[in-house]
Image (cartoon, rainbow, N blue to C red; front, side):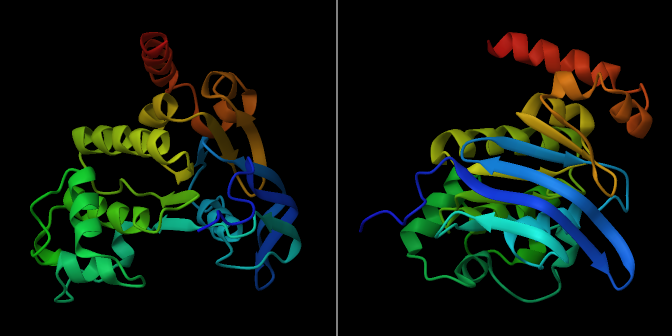
Length: 244
């Protein structure tokens, strides 16, 4: 099969002058943003700052009330929502869950579960999984679509610290293997700083954006998050020096 048009362009999504309202309440305004293939972009901001709204606008789940969002032709998005949005009481096996919304061969399901470190859960009930296993199954389902963009909305919510770190390591590996872009919303500031290429600070509009080391030095970032993340920055610099 020939590749879809746009599948090898660097730009995946571009937002220009985008705003969103819920009724008369403004949620976001003046959003100008480009997402490119292969980059990991993390959106941070206080509660109610419009993070989930921004993600939904970018992936096309909701339309903007102003401005426009342009997506590369044939763009495929894998979406991992917040864990709490899924009803865990439903009797459904991992095997069945991975088949929802797409036709996937059994071998592909098994291979993807192995890839996310869950080789032996195919026939288990979703409700019997730990928080970390549940998130990895949701990630496996998103990856089975071979996404150009992987969108993660607070995907590490409810995981313990080692679980969070392992999840981000897995995300970085996925990006390297697939060459997809990754758009994350996160509260894990200290981990994010070592796991992302670009940070977007949001509070109804984009307050600041750039590489983690640049963003954490801006007054806008400090106004939103205080100075308590200096340790995070030290960790980022240590990890970064370690990698390079």
